[in-house]
Image: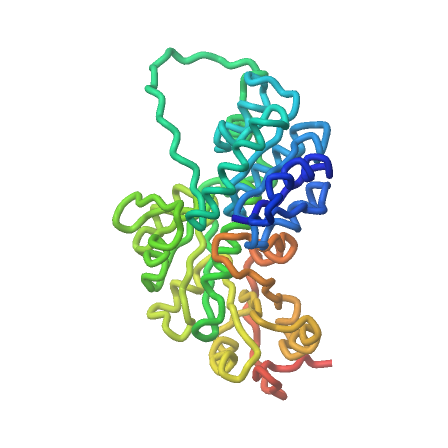
Length: 381
């Protein structure tokens, strides 16, 4: 267990006293604004638990709540919340419970109760290697007649459901995003899931669809703790909806705002038309000889609508790669470090550009010309 603490130094010192023998890993996260905290936590897989002091981030509780709502979707941490001075029946408490925070992990004051709970987690984490909070006992549901809730009684989750979304979600059917790799093992699934996590962070409903029936997602059911099987072809991992049968695409388009379709290696797609008819088309590529060998075939099929994201490219080489991409330079991007499928890297600007649906592209005229590293044609001067 590795505990990260987002609080003022006094709370950190208070919790650090539990580590007087040096047996535990407790770290202070030197970030305070929501943007700094997001950058520090998204894409960092070192921590297992995070203690967040609500008032330390902002005096307006809605600010840390909005941040927490995003981080719950984009990270896999167990959350501990210090809400010093709030009442048990406060709106903040209702919002935290609605977001899925365990009641026993919400502390209305620092002190003995908070230290006792953290000490329990530290001991369990040391003994078992990891800790999953015990499931809450389900309370019997009592049917009641419909009623109108006053605004003060509406929690953050219900409020978001009723709010008008900006930007507007697709009105009739899901936007489909096709992701393929120019070669095997180039990070196609990683980028598909990063897109999914980005859209979830923006409060869209999304599903990942395995179009190549690789079976890799089923294997993850035995690795991740938070998994729920819906039926033979649908399940959730870390709260993300996974579909493993491409025939369910039409159903998914009617249920979600975005469907991310993972086609695997481009050369193995049995029906290329299925890939090219999607709303957004993304090719994951690399620059090493064995990674770029199949790119010429991709370039031949590219009608001008394809977007490229390169994996494993040093930042010093990005300018050179863009130059080699010639007429596709403005549609060329570079993947951030993302070691875990279900932990978001936080690269909002990159993924926002990737999924911004392009309009119909006029057919490009293929002209003969010089070819470079990727056999990409150079722009005419």
